[in-house]
Length: 505
Image 1 (cartoon, helix red, strand yellow):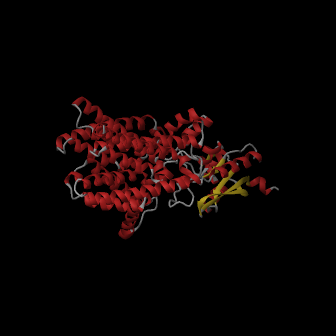
Image 2 (cartoon, rainbow, N blue to C red):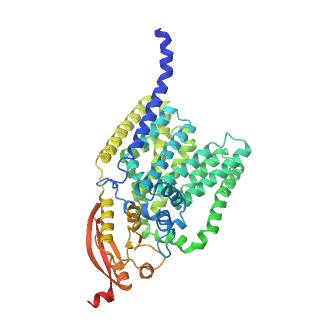
């Protein structure tokens, strides 16, 4: 009997290990859903302005379409003209679940689940065993960095989804017949198009996808050129169809997105190099110990030809270099940007460990032990944030909306604020942005006649001058403490008094 049980136990052990890993991944993913309306974790290592604005800005077309019947507010900030994919998905979600903060964030978490599955599939296609691939996905699911940012309804999770999906399709090209290869190359191009229409920074990730396409052609110049031509056609045709069919009619809004995101550029070679250094340094936001471990394992793995020749390693390095290069050129490193890069970092780490295990079990064991400790730390911090939710932004938005409804302003219920779209998502209060818009602020004020203005902490002199030019004075009426940035932690509500009416009192 003992001898007959041993083979059966050996067969069951991998199944039990796989089941435990899958259950752990599911449990960690479900942890992301806890207190979904809460603030982005206050007093966390990441100060990112996305938590004040981006959930509202980049979904405002869907929010407005469902609440007010019009996705487009003329003269205001309308990013959906250039980036339509995310608001289109949100529109579907809002039609099903209503315009609510948790619906938008829940959609982002569904995309995050897709990213975890794609990560597992990519590691498996790259030759990693099931145990190691599940370990990589488990590490991603337990990352406190992803716990914090994947709960925001922002563009990066969906950008990651299209990028990883394109890599997976491209890596499976070799095993396909000619008709299937043609269709899959077109699909690679379509996924790249969806990535660009989700966030234009996807352009800096395309070289990584192109490298996998060339790898699938055996790096033969002719075959690689044909593959790239078909994939480019698969992406260019739908993008041009969208641009000529809709975006061109709103060309001012389309081009304004790029103008609005233009930051002050460094002067001189020293400052330019410093900008690229800070962009590379920003990768540490995903976790300094993880990045340091990944760099050491990368250096060790590069000694092995099979590691260097792995298309997933090459794509991961190209994606990291491209995105860090963009961030340095843009001169605006933000913690959320690196959501896209934590996946390549983990891919390289897992692939290097798998390679080391065949040559040095000691080094592989040390590296694996470090990752286990980092995983435990990430899970512990995620649980801490989940157990200590704060709702300061939601409470401020509700308090502000309640005050406006309790103090009618000649029917002028609309709010003017940089966080206006975020507040609309939370409370359905109509709003336009004071900082961005294709029309000058006095013209937008004249068009929409907002009765209220909300600003964080101190008034901007330029905005105040524009409000005065539009014929209004500001009167502070209430304020709410929210979030944790010392420069943006006090949301002040002002009533916009018509200047002429105020002078006659």
